[in-house]
Length: 207
Image (cartoon, rainbow, N blue to C red; front, side):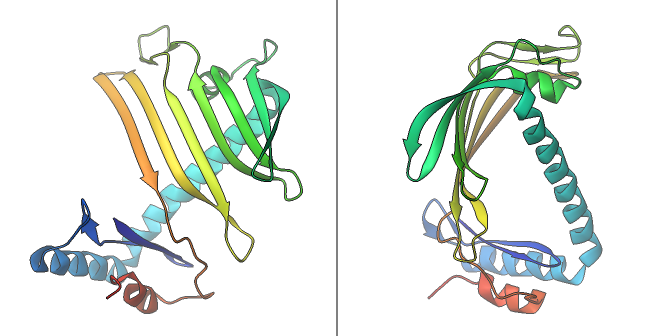
């Protein structure tokens, strides 16, 4: 388990336990040193934040592509969100390999219509996707993506559950297995303009 805090200057993470067991004194001290180094070397955090911003832009582009990549049909209501089935649109022409992967997903999307926010997604890769006719890689049929989001007290939406299970290969890598099972609990807003020093204190395990 990790405590994670997002500040104006970046994200800080601290390992709290492993398999439900608190860290030993040595491992806890090692975590303290790692976090302290991150705070004292903001240039490294800046690079991590730049990578994160790049990932965010890529995700935003992918979400925009969804509007034309799929055919959508109403599928009921789910915890205050509208559930929508989606399947590939035959008229969509992917321009990148990311869009090719996206276009082969089928599943359901949940949307909070009042706030125009995505509540979650459940999707499966409907068929094998080859990149460069299979020369540069492929992803096997049956890969799964599940994301569930919750609203914080301030009104922002955060991912509470992220599950990604994809199997394939990319270029010179013989096999590629992406398995992410991440559950985020006790998601709360932190004070605005939180300093790194304040965040470090908040990262410490509760006693």
